Amino acid sequence: MPETYNKMMNRILLILLLIAGIQASSFAQDAYMNAEAAEKEKTYNGGSAYVVKNYPQKFKAKKPRNIILMIGDGMGVAQVFSGITANHGKLFLDNMKYIGFSKTQSASDYITDSAAGGTAISCGIKTYNGAIGVNTDTVAVKTILEDAETKGLATGLVSTSAITHATPASFIAHQKNRGMYEDIAADFLKTDIDVFIGGGMDHFTKREDGRNLVEELKEKDYRVETDINTISQVKNGKLAGLTSSMHNGRMSERGDILPRATETAINILDHNKKGFFLMVEGSQIDWGGHANSTIYIVEDMLDFDRAIGKALDFAAKDGETLVIVTADHETGGLSILGGDMNTGMVKGEYTTKDHSAVMVPVFAYGPGAEEFMGIMENTDLHKKMEKLLLGK
Ligand code: MG
Ligand code: ZN
Image (cartoon, rainbow, N blue to C red; front, side):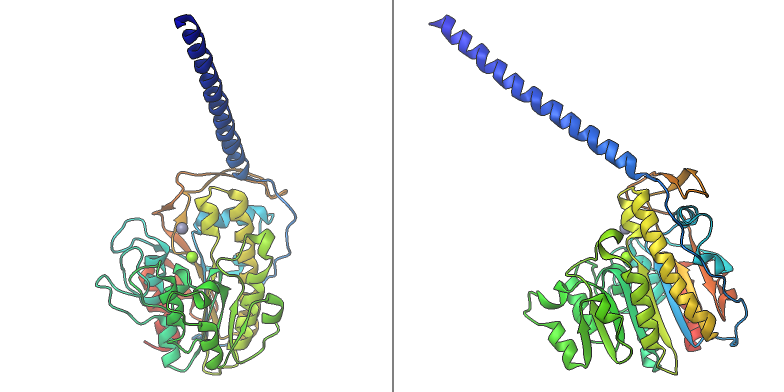
């Protein structure tokens, strides 16, 4: 009896060990596969380059009538250089000859998030991480977009994330926390913004308060569209382009919606002879940094650069438009330890899966561009834009 019992126990123990062994080895294999996949994402293998135009450096006006502010979320100098290398040595961005650096620290943290970073640029105040258009006492502060509206200028927002996400939200909403997406969406209805194009449809229609903000937008004479092919045909009037239920996908999925939305927004806003303010965000450069994926960063950096090309096309012809390209912070602590200007190969290395504290570049083109040289605080961007566009 005890012998049979012992045999049985040994057999059970053996089975348990076998199961544990199989699980341990498959777990190890998973970890190995993930590490290998992650390692692969760190190298962009290169690809064909697109043609970059050269634009004139003389402008008919001394002060801008329009400002196009372009924010590459998480775009540090290394991200820019990954794009330069991937496009075989040249970007549209190269046309922007006035260059400075922005210090991104927030009121609460040495390392900012996109909410405090966006609010610093939109409102000119240092606030706490997570704040959307409010100060450290959670009091609403007017944004440059709202100030432009008050002065009768046309206004717009374009983003590859949800339009309610921290960066675009900072220019139009006032909420104590960036996660309050439905309240942020409702804030769009409190403004007279002319054009906004991005994801985030669910925050307008699938709401806890039961409101249907798409219907409310239509009552306010907005044309509401979801397909970029239809959106890009809109030439005037008010436009709400909600291109996805939440965030737009990666480049392979979303295609060239950012350059197309940028061009569409510019053409609509240009009808206002008093001028316009437009903010365009390349949102997912940041997500590539969080994922430590050089492939993701390069794809989104080049997409953002093609949107910059659309802005420069217009600014070069117009002569009264100032284009500013900057970032809210750097993401990933990216360094580039290998590459090839002929093939476009880029080998990235990362020091964090989060944001880093380093200064981010500021590039400017057009009348007033010389104001954006040197080292500045992120809040100075707001002051300079207000002074040039609104005479404040
Ligand atoms: Mg963002
Ligand atoms: Zn981020």
